[in-house]
Image 1: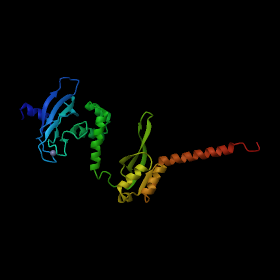
Image 2: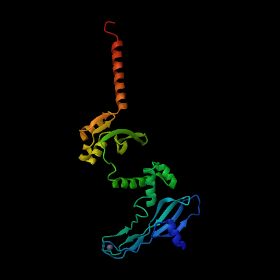
Image 3: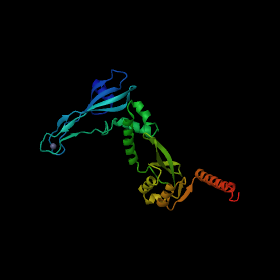
Image 4: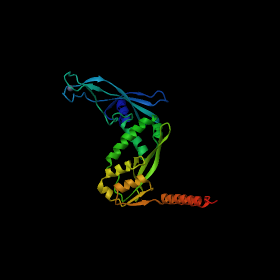
Length: 279
Ligand SMILES: [Zn+2]
């Protein structure tokens, strides 16, 4: 068991080789603010090997996971180093510490992983998660995109194999002052009932380039292609999956048949009821 108060504090904060400089937790309505600095040895300049000098000590505030029932912030006093050799091409640099936080993100690494998990795995909204951490929407959203993209890029077998592929349009969001409709195309493994991906727009461009990325071998295994009778999706299948049998789903087929019957009924009715030339 650890009894040294400084070591106890460091264990609680759980970031390894960091010194806890100060903890600000007086105001119960404010987040706990933990001030830290890393215990790096003084580095040498990477270009010329001269021992570096401290240029300045920028402070960054990071949103961390809640601690002891309160939201928490990590105030990290970094070291910006400089090469003292005037003839050296290296001027200044900051040592990154990815275990604490990824560069340019407003969340600690552990908070970034947690928010990506909450949104990606549990389907919670960014807004909800931001409220849990007591921070703004953009801070959480930036982290979800950064960590989520890395996870997707890392999972090479994410798509798997499919023999039946479906395309369907979905209204993704409404954007801007006039709440313009932003559409997306869902790409589905119809055989397994699995959503494979979502691409921007409801025209042929997104799904066609998605299929092009999969490659010829992957595309050649698709035997059935389902669609809602839309022209752009038919183009995608005609050009990218010419060997696949196109299947229209019953809902859209029946809807189209009803529309045609209606049109015919109206035309015949107009022709029958229209006054003849002798009347
Ligand atoms: Zn140097």
